[in-house]
Structure formats: C-alpha cells, structure tokens
Amino acid sequence: MTSTSQTVSFTAMEHGTREDYEFLGSLEEGEMQGFPDRVLDWLRTMHDSAGYQISRLDHSLQAATRAHRAGEDEETVVCVLLHDIGDYLAPANHSEVAAAVLRPYVSEKNYWIVKHHGLFQGVYYFHFVGADPNARDRFKDHPYYQATIDFCANYDQNSFDPAYDSEPLEFFEPMVHHVLARPVNFESDT
Image 1 (cartoon, rainbow, N blue to C red):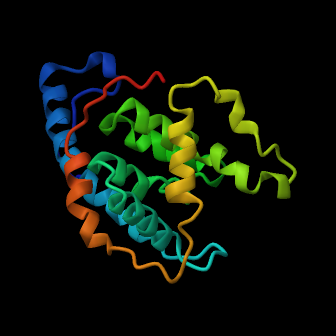
Image 2: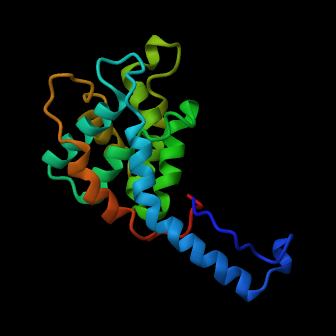
C-alpha cells in the first residue's frame, strides 16, 4: 500500500472533485505497478504443508512447472501457479478468491477454470468426505468443462510429489509480472 500525507477533500464520494479523483488515480497507478510483486509475496507465504508431503508453495511450483513443460501459454502457466493463492484468506472458497484476484488480467477461460477447479478436484476425494464426487457434472454443457477437468488432471491433483524437479519461483516471476502488468478485463459479471 502506498502511504501519503496528502488526502482527498471529501468525506463522501459524491462530493469529490476532479482533482481528488486524479490524485486517487495516481495513487492507484502505483498500487497497480506493485501488484505482481504483492501476489508473488502472497505465494511465498505458502510454505506450510497443510498436511501434504510438500508445501503449498511447492505444490504451486510443481503444478506450474508441469504446465510450462506441457507447452501451455504464459497466461495459463501463471494461472496454474496462482490457482491456490486464496487458500489462506478463504479456505472454504479458495478457488473463487484466486479467480477474483486473477479476473482483470486473464481470459474468460482461465478465469472460469481457476474459479471452478476446487469443485472439479472433488472427483478425486469428495466420496471420502461425504460429498458428491460428480458435483462438477452440473457444468457438463459449459464450454470450459473439459478444460477444467484437464487442468485438474494434468496440473493440480498430481502435483504433490516431493521427488518432482520443479522450477524455482524465480523462473516464473517474469511471467507473473508480464501477465499481471495491466488489467485486460474490466467486467467481472461472470
């Protein structure tokens, strides 16, 4: 966050002036420029295992490495890397939180995949916890249904291997900076 001693003149937005909003816009520009580093810092905090054989950070790196080695485009690799960044803030709906963070920067397809990957992962374990492993089937007719199945099968469910040779976070940093450099989608009604 940017710290400044200057403030706007209003106490209710409806009373703001052009100068107030230009000032706020300049502060927001600084926030936007620092956003990729802030997201990378969030990812770095995921060093706990949460019961898995590897840390959540290592899971993310492994999944992104698999996507990169499979020839996925840069945006998809970044989405795979960041698909679980919602874990700490919202464990009950981490997928939706991660998708909301990525939404302004990624395609509709990648947004949808990240948003729904948690439900789609359920096919592997929901039957052990009393939930419907086929809950994802309500989306069978959705154009990104199979892509989300593939995401989970190829990059998420199989990326908990302590012996896998993942790329380090530094390998992905330029990709994160590139993808999160400027918002491309300004509508979030999906």
